[in-house]
Length: 298
Image 1: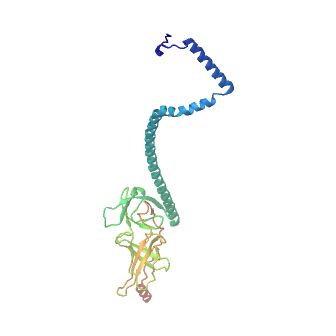
Image 2: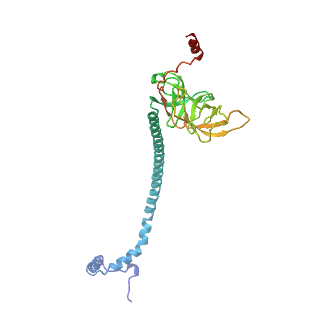
């Protein structure tokens, strides 16, 4: 009876034989691939089959990299937003300063034009603060006796009259605005040439013409300038514009309201005008009685 070994102990080619066979097969595949490109399709098919496995193998690293990039990008964006917000605030501040400088330059050019038109010496000053009295319309400027300021000098801006210097200190001066109650300015109507007295009411932005007869030719929209007859304000400086005219026969005088053209709330720089040119002295009063007596005596 023929005896066959069990499958567990079945033997095959020797290791050396296997090595030779596999080496020969490898050489044949290399030659076939290098010379005839027979393995290209097989390689592509293998790559297609292995691609999902490669993606699965690299997925954890890719996910970790993207998560880290997300947090890094989020932090970088937050920092960039903070820097951009700070830069935006800085640019807004610079833009506001630029607009303020443009307005101030335009105002200063207007003041230079006023100085040339006035034809008299003038000193530039800056408004520091308002007076402590809430019922008075007064401001303090940064020039005083040491700066060549004298009491009684008119104060103007590039539009018109603001007020008058009423008190002088060594380095400061007090300016009473034309809107102060009781402050009077002799004015003239540009349209008709009629003269009048403009008085402050104590309210900011409101003036009134006093003691104007009902028949006087004053109309809404008329512009009032300084008449110059007081010897303080030079003639021709804009002061106010008539906003309301009411004539009631029950009263002796007309109710005429005006608004000032200039104002300290517009700008901080003002001009203090110098003294007006000296006028000739007033001639002596004519005494007709004394002259008649001299004639009779002769």
